[in-house]
Amino acid sequence: MVAPIQLQNLTKAYGSTQAVKDLNLSIRPNQITAFLGVNGAGKTTTIKMLLGMIRPSNGSAYLLGTSIRDAKESVRIRRDIAYVSESKQLYDYMTVGQILRFTRPFYSDWDRDLEKELLATFELPLDRRIKSLSKGMRTKTALLLAFARRPKLLILDEPSDGLDPIGIEQMLQKLVAQCSEGTTVFFSSHQIAEVERIADNVCMLHRGSLVLDLSMDEIRQSYRQIDVAFSHPIDQAAMLMPGVEDIQSNGRQMRITVRENAELLMGRAKDLGALSVECGPVGLREIFIEKAGDSK
Amino acid sequence: MMLWYKAWLETRMRFVIALVLCVAFCSELMISLPRLGSGKVDLVGLHGVHYALVFVWILGVTLLMMGGLLSERANGASSFTLSLPVSRVHLMAVRAVVGFIESIGLAVVPWIAMLILAGPGVEARRYITQAGLQVFLLVVGGSVLLAIALLLSVLIEGEYTAPIASLGIIILLAYTFSGNDFVAYSPISFMTGLRYFNRLTGTLAGAVPWLPALAFIAGTVCLFAVSVQVIEHRDF
Image (cartoon, rainbow over all chains, first blue to last red; front, side, top):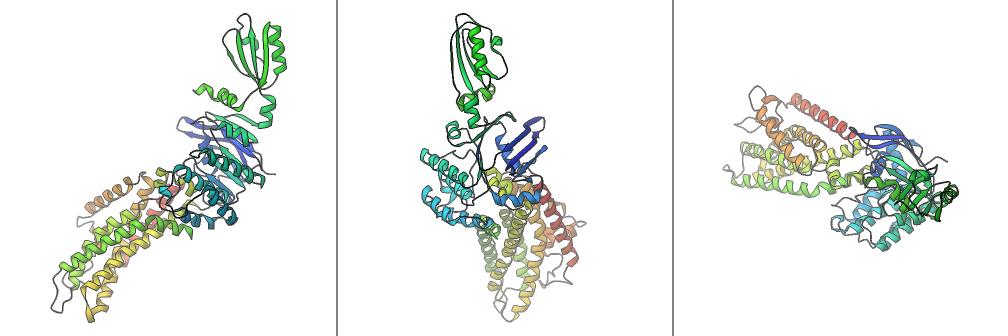
């Protein structure tokens, strides 16, 4: 099966600044993939390149097997793709009903029943102007427009931004439901809790480069946090070995994040005279902070 | 089809405002014009009102060409537009055609009001023919200004910056082409019809100026092509 999103050395440079650097990525079909990164990491630039809004400086990308550089084909495949932008801005001069009437005819798979269901769930007033909607209501309208077209690929940029906890819950449930019906979901988010709840895979971008591309299962199984206490100060270098991702030390105590070789590292700590060695799972939040922390 | 719907919804308020302005302005002038013994306004008077209409029309068209993808980028809606399965050329073309149709409305409707207020009576056919010619000159010459406004709307960001720049360029054009050597190339001079209408009779003197008309249409097409190229290569 063709990867719904495939990036090969995708690069975007603005002058001497590289917003996205040699990005290689392949998204698994019919799964939910989260796209993480701090502000300015290059997530939105990557998404906009995929949708033909920004021209890549180098490299190539394929959406549903079609090159994004082919302008004609790029227009065609947008019938199978739904996108909710970071801003969630729609046309202020239209009402909710008008924007539905406007959007429907572009998509042959538009689901009127789902539209009605979402209108009721999100409590969207058809006759209200978009301009007068709250940010949360705008987000819900944008989500409705994306969900109701029954896309093969759903790309969302910070979808929960502006939603209240109930709205977030409704959105997450809908995402999972759409995925179970065959839609591939690719979404960027800062909300780690949301990602941990629904994502099957996680990609993380940092300063335009891919620093993590694993399934949630792989993260849960392979990442470990090891807390070690020594009676005397130990040099961090003594604990370095393949698989060590991060070491935080205050001399006698160390917190080590490892991706592999946890057992080996615990053995070394004991050999060095550790008073206590504790090993536990690592949350996505810790990995996120560890990967992106150097920018803060 | 829905892009036409969007373009209409986007511009209808500005169109109505511009239309009301044009009709009210022309009607006011018509009412103040001296009338012949039969109570009608002669064609010279109508030609004078047309001259004034040209400038209000330019303002109206500048208003109409506000908006577009760059303006949508400023408020964030361009991402939604560009995610639709339509090309940027298609988006531009619909916007240009709707603007052009509305600009015809801005010329035709005030002229209908002018003709009604002129009360031509048995000379209605002659009045309508001359009105048609004046509208033709206005719309064809004005299409260049419409294309300039369109081009600036894809070059300059900001809701109001592009129309202000557009008006600035139109004033500059009017000033540059005002000398006798260049007046033949002036779209504004073409629109007013001063060079083609007899000032004593208010009727077209000689043949319809097809050649300049074609030149202005060609200029419009070129400007539109440049606008398309600009929008095709822009990052959003």
